[in-house]
Amino acid sequence: MTETDATPARGRVGVMLPRDLPIRDVLPYARRAEELRFDQVWVVEDLGWRGGLAQAASVLASTTGITVGIGIMPAGARNVCFAAMELATLAQLYPGRLITGIGHGMPDWMRQAGAWPASPLTLIKEYTTALRLLMRGEPGPANGRYVRCEGVVLTETPEIVPPVILGVRGPRSQAAAGEVADGLLLAEPAAPAYIAASLRHMGSASDASGAEIVTYDAAAVDDDEDAALARVRGALIAIGDPDWAAHIDPLPFAAQLREHQAACADARQFTQTMPAAWIRQLSIAGTPDQAHEAIKARHAAGATSVVLAPVGPDALVSLDSLARALDPRP
Image (cartoon, rainbow, N blue to C red; front, side, top):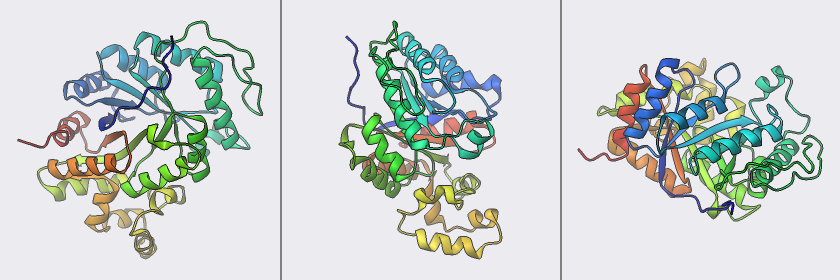
């Protein structure tokens, strides 16, 4: 019998596999994350870098029990029937160890690839509905505006169907996650106020209490708080762009942040001169105790999994330092 609607585990902590990690370090990084007792490793799929499915398969094969998330696969990039076959196969081989993130993809990238639809919301709803049905072994739904898989049935389906969560930020897309998906993936920065606002959007369509809510945040841990905060500033350079407005609007200092941005000559000055208190909200950075508390705050706001995106010149060294936030006691 296929398992489909398991309640997500709470209080998980994961780590992102950096997209620019040298290929020789990819599998050692994943194995080290498991040794350090992280619950999850998340791979990213950005246009021009590495494929999400290939990374996920390799990490699953090189580890023994850690959960692997794909965050995210753009809905417009793959035919849903073949995506379902790939994901179902991974879930058969590595039961209970896969989480699938689906998103719109960055508009400029998707346009460049000729895969940006006239209605991204329609596409992602059709795609997610079909993907979940197919991986359960149920017939594909009636053909829609974009997704055509009516009557398709997968012969090989997993005992544990991986959750399908939506990596989206707009209120309408987050509401769609409540309608058609198993949860949300919130890109960085995912401050507690943004998590709470996103859950309200999703909860307007369904009961979000049983959803998988995964958050990303730039992260640095150091015995010297100032050193850790300095490292994450560069990772926040894009947050003043319009695409990140949804992340900023719920923050209590959103108006002051925009005033500060308007007074700065460029994005670098903007991030380098932000008050430390803002950096603490917009990242998981500081001493081990401070980072641990930041993780707890995100769980308290509704995240089931908090994923740390390491910042620093050496990802493997950064990974070891981030692990100190899991249990900050000496």
